[in-house]
Length: 216
Image 1 (spheres, rainbow, N blue to C red):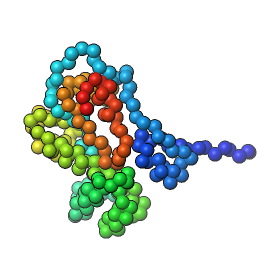
Image 2: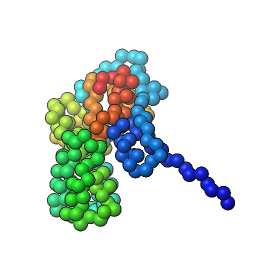
Image 3: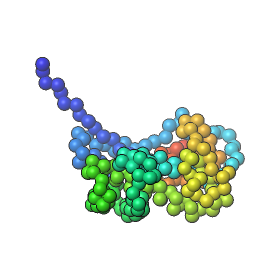
Image 4: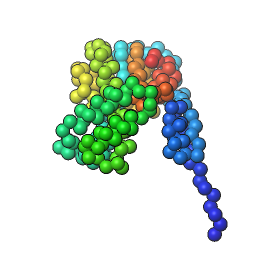
């Protein structure tokens, strides 16, 4: 019959830029907790390892993220997506890329939602879609500018339709805990392309690649 103590909810982020946003959302505490690397999985092999590739990128094409948030908005298939909607989303994504903010401009997101008759409850999902598309555009811009004969891309099946690389230059996903350290060590140059929403944070590759004794 007594009063139960209030449960405190805290947030931890590997990007300091998100701490004010977490506090705005009502978290009792928001703390910076940077990423790191686990030496049980990422460490130099201790033996000479010949380079199997010149230049490589391990990462997702973010095709699945696009589909996920389109469904959350209410578009369950290509036929359901209104004409020009993705063009407007990608235009908003390009506008977001140079911003210092960790989230797309609220007015632009709301304007896009209003133009396509989207309910206010999907505004966060629409902002997330814009953010993921911004990361995808950033990755494509960088990878497309590199020499195709030297670039190897490992990731999901969405990549072959996005980059003009020979089929043999694509690799399937690599298990994070078994094989990724070896892949890093066998690449002369490992590329890191930080996601668009991480304006000042350091992602996992920044720690794992050097921990493996490889070059980032």
